[in-house]
Image (cartoon, rainbow, N blue to C red; front, side):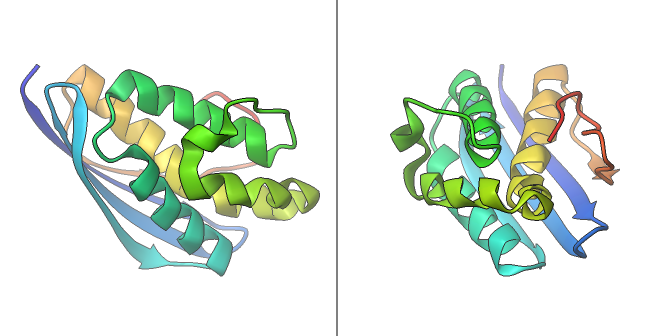
Length: 139
């Protein structure tokens, strides 16, 4: 599979959050991940916790973690939430529907990075989440 570097930029226009995510994938494993940007405390905390949760993980596991986190912040029962590490603490966001997009912004950027890595695309992307998730899942 080799090495892939993917850079993604996403924003949440409803809150003003902006994230710039850089992901390095080596042989199907996230070998390095970093973010910068500006946003509310939920968005920033979620991005930080996400990087800790996925570093060193294979892409297949990362995809599962992304779905778990999405389910968690939507108030769904996630039996293996402990696999999310500290990010599991954001389950309370489900009580504040307007903040779900803040919590999921970094995870959506990661989802896009994984998709780009799997298809061999390694370029900068800009995505602006709307009422329906641009990656096919509803918030």
